[in-house]
Image 1 (cartoon, chains in turn red, green):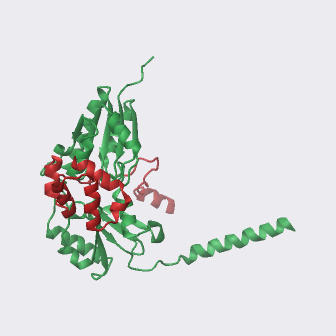
Image 2 (tube, chains in turn purple, orange):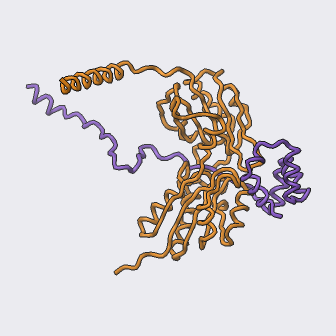
Image 3 (cartoon, chains in turn yellow, red):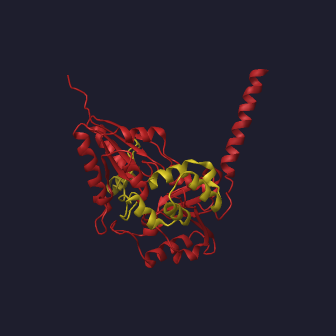
Length: 96
Length: 273
């Protein structure tokens, strides 16, 4: 019996979501889960579970990194334009 | 006339908890694929998916401490697309939701579409979805803003303390290099200092972790903000900051809405009479 099959079964059974430890042992025994696997499941012994599942590599999971300054979503909206630089000569001419 | 390209890519999410969140549709995609690429958050979950399709390839080796994650993501995209170019039916399997805080699925789909391939994203149950259920938070009640923690630190943000604030990936807060798997107390001190400019140091915050295995419990540790400095954080720890102030009524807008309502009533009465 594979560890992943047992875990998948546990993940899909509502009664196992709220069970107390003794109930868990009974249900796992009814499912013919081997005693060593039962023990690891009940103790949440992650190292042993990974070994029994045949997986021992450390998993890395990181989400998307910060984007660059000035990035905007490509959603059709234009970012606000910067103010036009002051044209002092034009302002002076207008004033006079 | 051009023949349609045979290669395709579907990026899907398998949720967070093994066995509990995988949809039948997602399982069918995995089982029927020519090649499956896989990026999940738990070794046993990885093993579980590998058992659904003989040609399942983990994207884990692309992550290496000291190498920028931007390069890792770029290489993941290329690895997936190279199989699409070989006219294979490719499936990308990601933990949670493939489009939430995950650039690789978005990039793969965008580039595949640009090259004329069939490309699709299928939603999955995200860590955010689990958080709302496990912590009994409705993001619509007071509003909710969320950021990747380093991005929150590096860019100026206008934070509304009357809404929830969720900071993801808090264990690598302040990693400017994108190469680290954890950051130290000094970076965390800067984060706490930034948060204390918005909230009091005694404000109660939550450290949340969703269970990846169905035998795991939820982490729901409520601590003072100042204790964030010393609390143990894992790579999948999330910081949830509840509102610290009451929402303030926008009387100006309410007045405008009230005037509008009165105006509409008057128009209606005119029409009736």
